[in-house]
Length: 300
Ligand SMILES: [Zn+2]
Ligand SMILES: [Zn+2]
Image (cartoon, rainbow, N blue to C red; front, side):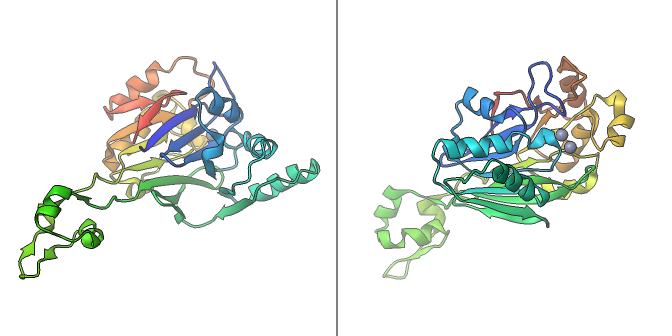
C-alpha cells in the first residue's frame, strides 16, 4: 500500500469548509505528514488517520497556512503519552518557534523531538519502504517540495519452480537480487525461470507553493503522481506571478512537461467558492487531473 490522503486544500485562510494545506502519505507501517495547516488534528481524526503512526513530519515553508497546526499536534502527541521519537523536517527558523512555544508553556514532551533543518536538496529520510528527497521550489520565502519514492521490491520467487530445479532455500536471497543459479552439474538456471519481476517502485512529488517554474521538471520527471498548486484560475496569471503562485494552466503545463501519470491540484484561493473551473481549465492542458479534495485518498 502506498496512498495519499488529502487533509486540507485551501490557501491562506480557511474558507467554504476548506482547510489549509496538509496531506498524508500512507504505507502499511507509517503515516508521513506533509505540511500541517491549522485544523490538521481535527482532519486526522475525521478521516481516521492514526497520529501514533506519524513519525516524520515534512514542512515545506513557513507561511502560516502550512504549519499553524503543528504546535497543537506536537502537544497533543505529548498529552496522550507518546514515547516514540518524532522527526520534523522544515526550514531552520521553525526550530526556534517550536522551542519558544514549549518553553513558554513550561512543557516537557514525553518523547524525543528531532528537528532537521532543510538546507540543501537531496535525500532527507531513508526508511525500510520509502526514501524522501527534498527539492527547492521558487516561492516568496525559502520553500521545499518533497519526493517520496517507494523502494524497489526484490524479485518474487516462484517456489514451485525453484523447488523443481532443486535450488536450495539458502540461495533464495540471491535469486531475489536477480542472480542465476548454477547446479552441481554446471547447468545454469536462468533467474527469469524461477522468479518474476517485482512491481514498479512508485513515486509521489509534492511541489508545495511555487511560482511557475520549469526548473522543477527534471526533479519530478516521470513521477506517478504529483501535487501542484493552482491558487488561481488562468485569468489571474499576473496576480499569481506577483504572489509566487500558479494558475490551473501552468500546473497542467508542468505535469505535461514532466511526463507524469497523474496530477492533483489544490491550494485554492479563498476567493473561490466553487472548484469546477479549476478542474476544467487544468484538464484542457493535462487530461489526467483531479482536484485534491479533502478526505480523498489516491493510490500512488
Ligand atoms: Zn500556502
Ligand atoms: Zn506560501
